Image (cartoon, rainbow, N blue to C red):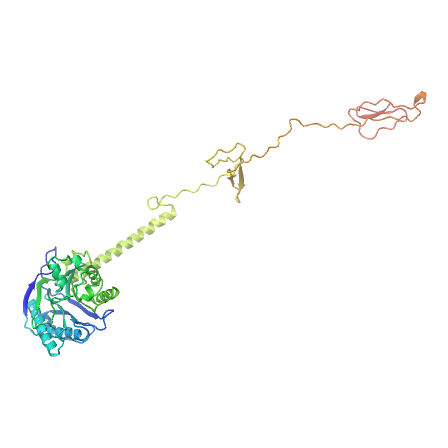
Length: 458
């Protein structure tokens, strides 16, 4: 085994915080999934929360002296050979690490991976499966510090303030091209050699294990160990968002579901270790990080109570303003309403105003006047699109007075016509004015004559 200490892949713009003297609690969940295209699952993880094929009886005192070990191994060689290789390597690494005397956790981790490689090489030689092997990404969290080592292209991330920082370097042909400035990281995303390993476990009795500088952890940090079946299909930013969106068990399920949703071309393995309290999303609250976890809970409780009081006070004020608006209106809370015009008092005459702006109204054009059910007069202009003048019947200049023609009375004498005895026609009597009413008076002698409205005998 060759010792090799590397710097972390990403450096932070903020200084590393001082280590806390109080050991922070860990919440861990590990899960693995076959994906959507592979027939079998060649990945192995430790610890595996659903039990799995391998369990190591880890005592509390051992955790205190050695810390928590997290490992993902991705088998290569196909089907049963890949699965057997990853399981064998993880078992040997876990056993060797916890059997070592307490010391430098980083060096102990590097030694354990080297030991597992040598054991796997002998196993493959004995079983004559020389084309198999595996990758391994391992992390130890001890005394609030993260120790990382790897072989192959499985990865360890540190998620802090909603951002994912890769802590390992891939041993692939594509990474070599990046290191030699042949490709940029953006171009490497579509490079066909991403899965071509330049280093793996089981291909020789020794292997170069990369060990990285330890990283002090703070409350809210999240450590993610995963296989390429996750990060090849879920971008780093999305991984960070999902990992911090829920507790480790639910977050791990979300990550696996996202990888399957995006294709699920490979096996998918995820281990999440939450340090202290709940991991924070993007932005975070730097002020809270200066307090302990219990103090943060008290502060959050006070903030929630304050929000409730403010909402209640706002509701009371809003209801008060609403009541004022119903009674008399509040010019500061609601726009002034336009007062409806009062009903006009009926009048003997109605002034009609034309509303047709496009053409003048003929002088003899009027409007219809309608009366509503409440007795108020409203005017409705007649249509003005076509105007046809109606002939007006003019009265005659003078009214003729008809004077009936009175028949000229004829007088026929009773006798033979006077002394001469001959008949004849008497001259017409003048028209009685005024006329006498009733029948003429029968005269014994003489003739009835109308004088001054009365009949007299002459």
